[in-house]
Image (cartoon, rainbow, N blue to C red; front, side, top):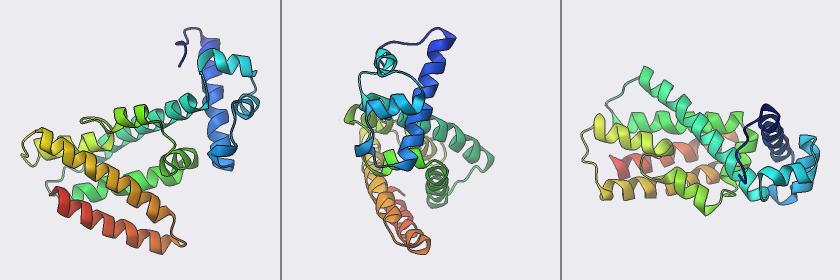
Length: 195
């Protein structure tokens, strides 16, 4: 963001930009979305949009980060209700929750599966302790007694990268049943690697 909104009117403008962009993401490929289209969908001028964001990528990143923060908060609630001491079952719950979250939010699904998040934003979300990988790390260290180390962080980074690509592959399948098969195989693969 170019500047942090302070006034309520500015906060409303930011929300309009997010809502307009999310609506467009649910309707069309990201490549067809321009700052002009975002401004029109948000009901604001292009100049008003540029007061807060230097371009489309920064808006996409902000939406992705907001969704990941929301998902992490939701996941924490889900996992606290069912304290598991079984790594593969825990991982399965994380994957199932993420897939359900993607199904509920077509805008985030378009961003996440299309690999449209900038390298900077992605790096922040996949850093040790951040995003779903951070929760898996916390589980492994606190519940399974795995030693916190750079080696563990690398393993989680690799598992996150592989998981993202396999989830995108699962969504590319022609039927829901075939998607479920790919996800089941992915869970087995990642569980064997991590646990």
